[in-house]
Structures are given as structure tokens and as C-alpha cells.
Length: 157
Length: 108
Image (cartoon, rainbow over all chains, first blue to last red; front, side, top):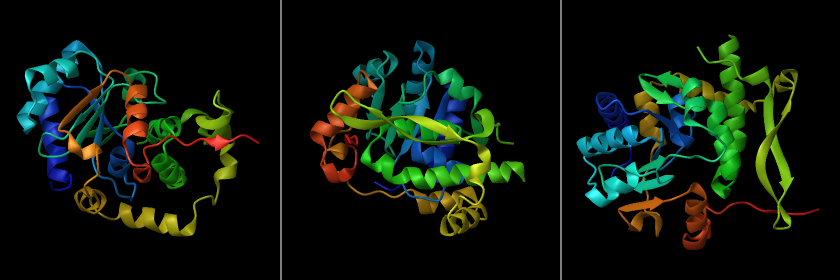
């Protein structure tokens, strides 16, 4: 399987918009969209957890080319907190309840839009990595903290 | 325009004592903004500035890679009731070197 690329991110953006699905790029993939120079293997989406949004999500994913059977669709719609998809054109993690972020609505209010891609604020990306506290998160946090300082400097001009 | 961060502070890792006799990074502590001046290492600053000069499409081409991750990549679909279930599954099933295990620090 080829690595996730800009064109595929556009497919997510456009298909999710067509189906009115609310989501945010999160994790290192989100940080990369914000300008963070690092590497990662797949894309992570923080998806608003509601029945209607779940239906939109399944429709959008099928349109992009993910093979989702009815049982899997039911699991996505029924409120699972974490879904891992490796049955489509690229790997995708659907995160409905990320560590360190209380509610989707709060993250949505703080979102940053980059070339039409809705992305979690760097504060939320860092908060979720601190809370997840995995080895790989610990290793990337110092660089992410420095990147946050850089963004703040840019904001202040 | 970036939204202003809460109180313009720098979060730092904050260690809390866990019920397992170790410490888990679970929260943030904050220090005043003034302390952040010149806090970006020069090599990282150069990286960030170089990245900012590249278009997003190009940055993504450099950023996303794909290698096979044992166990993790061996099923086309997995769903977990809770994020904690997912974290637990990763710790119990994935090789340590993939880095998905939670970090526990020894007390004292």
C-alpha cells in the first residue's frame, strides 16, 4: 500500500463535505497539516460521535473506496470509540474519544483550517499525546512542544 | 489566524502518581509565557522555517511513509468499545518496539 498523500487527504475533505460529516485531523497527521516537519504512517481523524454523523461517515468512507460491510458499518455508527481501517486505499484511524480531549465540540471550536482541511488545534494534539502517554508519543512531544512555540511566535508576528 | 491559547502559557509534562506504583504522564502544568523566549532549539527552528517554505502537498509527500507494522496491519478492520480497550489491546498484542505501550516511570 502506498503512503497517504495530499490527493487522498483531498478525497477525505471533499467526500466528508459532500456527506456533511464533522471530523478533524488529529495526531501527528494533524500536526503535519499544521506545518510540523516529521514523519508518520497513517492518518487519524477525530470524528463527531453521533448517529447522524456516523451514517455520513460510513457513506463518505464507502465513496472514497473503503470496503465496509454492513456489520462494520453498524459498529462505526453504533458508538465505538476507536476504529482502525485497513480495508481501503489508505490506512485510517477513526478516533471518537481521544485521550485528553473531553468533547468534540470543544475541539471543533478551536479547530484550524488549512487548505480546507479541518485540523485540531496544536494544543489539543499535544494534550491528546500527553494523555495517551505511549512511548512513541513521549518521543515526539519535545519536538511538538517546540513547534507549538514556533506557531505562537508566528501568530504574534 | 491562530486562535489565542488559553492564558498564553506553555504546558509542561506533569507527573502524577499512579495506582500502579509508578507515574503516568496525565496532565499539564503551565509556566508564564515569558519563559518561552528563545526556547526553540536552533536546529528545530531551522526545520520549522524550512517546512513553512514548502507547499503542503510537498510536506505531505515527505511526511507520510508506509512500512508494515506486525500484528497491527494484519487485520482489515478493528473496532474497540473504548479508547482504553484499544490502548490495552495494543499493549497486550503489539511488539514493544512499535512504541504503542504506555510509559510508566518508577516512583522516587
